[in-house]
Length: 353
Image 1 (tube, rainbow, N blue to C red):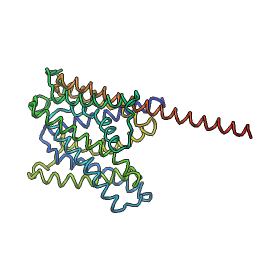
Image 2: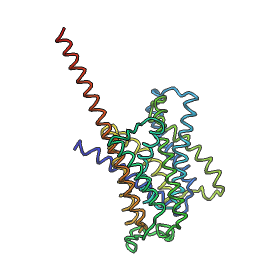
Image 3: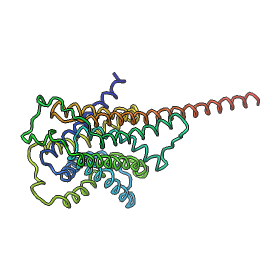
Image 4: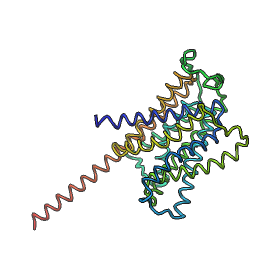
């Protein structure tokens, strides 16, 4: 049972992320402004995390200098505020399934940026290096396929989906134009690039400010302020800021508290038990869960191009992860061999003496 727990928790994490794509898309389709949504989501996350952080971490909080604060502010602006705003607009132009499919590019983009920042090395003439480069190429091919090739549309369970909206034309029934679709894919890819950049740079900030929980809470608070000013700049109608007891409020509470709060702890637990590669290997499940739920619940239209592109994205993800795993295994094997040589060399010297 102990062996199955990390897998079960990983399944829960990816299903929670699938819920994020579904609920966000539904909220946008029924009229929720994307910029206002991001502000309310981050505000909910801050309200959820701040009391816990203050209670458990106030005595152990590392010192926060002005330089570190500016770095955290810019980190929040790039990786949270910009990423969420871009992905929100992208979801308006595309579908929840596509948003989930492009999440497979995140580990690959993160690896590519880590190479650019010289945090990762690629040995091109080794099999792991070739697999990494092939994975990046497959991901690029997958994104290009999704953006440029639509193909025939598969509208499964069209007359039998379980949830029908009174805005029937809004929920999964309209086919976006090619121009709108390409714009949505491009924005989603840009959102993933900013998110990957956040992942890469956060490692450097954590070295100076090692409290993960406080760092997350502070970033949520700063991104709330940033998202507010962005929303005020783009949304002038007071009616678009109003909330009621409807799907909009449910989506905000879910994304703010469940996705930002609970999944953060669960991800940290899985990484501690099985490592980051194990968690990354389960990323394609977000796409599977989201596509199934979107089709079954809302009768969402899926194009052949999206399916082919998603297959390429998953293939690229696993190529990069395979290369990364093999490279780590080789490095461990080399280190172990060096240690054995040192021990044997020391034993010979003692015998000679």
